[in-house]
Length: 91
Image (cartoon, rainbow, N blue to C red; front, side, top):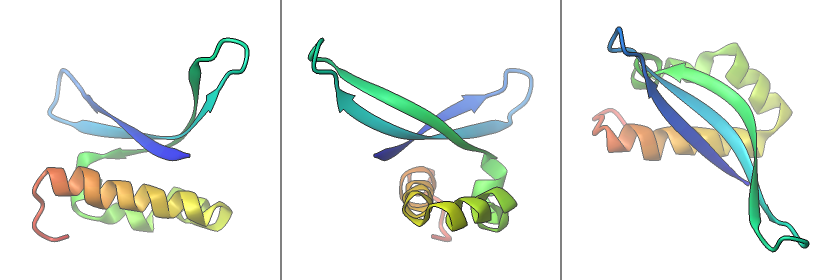
């Protein structure tokens, strides 16, 4: 299991959104191909991620209560992949 994100920018505005998915990869025995199953988790705007407001959201708290491992993976993905790549100085 791993967390995958997609970055979407709206054409009319400068608003950027991040969509997060919980992914599982498995190998199909019949076709010998690797398949990926994605489950939608959350959507955040870039401003929320930069201001670190995402941790206090109700959906994040629900995810933390339901599945702590997925929550840790999601927070790690946000902190180290997205915010670190954007050179945010408050990490």
